[in-house]
Structures are given as structure tokens and as C-alpha cells.
Length: 147
Image (tube, rainbow, N blue to C red; front, side):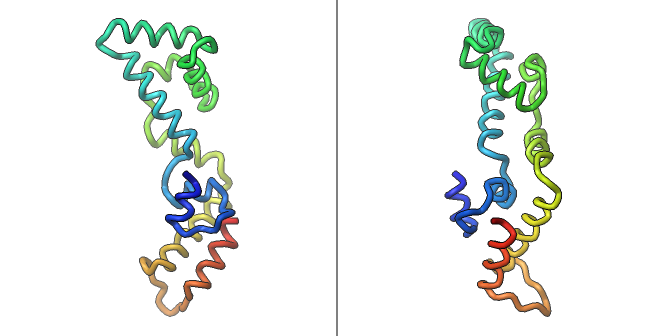
């Protein structure tokens, strides 16, 4: 997935993964998978079907003896949220984004923001009056910031 995003955004091949996610405005793939698993578990946990609710609750209670239980336990440990809370109320999309951002240094985020502006200049979406940046200048600067 990162390779494709690097190509879409015309980023250097050795761009850091976290930088690719920030530029693309998405959360890391692992967080996206956790989000989908937890949404599935939550919908099953609150299903109208007694059988579905029973199977999900047994899977969660079995913890490491069940694939579902392992997934929920992994997410619980990853996000520092109790298994009970994960199964009773949904986590907001901003929760996953905040979790991702808190693991990044402020300096790194600022570098990526600068690189994003350079990408916009490179693509002629953003202009800099009185400053002439060639495409090659932008590519060099982006490479220095993101690798």
C-alpha cells in the first residue's frame, strides 16, 4: 500500500512510512485494520441475533484461544482501552488519528507539513508569489525532508 501511495504522491522510494501516511491524510494500515475489526466486533456484539451475540461474547471471553479474542486483546493492548469498552462503545475516527499522531515527534510532523506544501507547489496547486521554485528544486527539498 505504501509503495502505491509513494507513486501517487511522487515521493522518493525511501520515504518513511509515517511520512507517507501523513501526506496522504490516512491512518496506518494496522490502525485501519484494527478499526475495521473493532467495528465488526461492535456490530456483532450488539446484533439482533442471539446466536451472533453469543458467538462473539464467547470468542471475546476465550481471549487468546480464539482468533476474535486475540484480535480484540491486541487492539485493547495497542490502544490502552479495556476489552469491555472496545465492545460496548465505538472509538471515533479521530481516536485512531490522534493515536497515530501522538507517536510522532513535533519536528517530524513539521517536516512533513513543509514537504506537503512543496508537493502542492510542485503540482502547481499552491503558488509562492515572488519566489521561483523549479520542479527539480521541489523534488530535492521533498527528498531532504522525507528521507
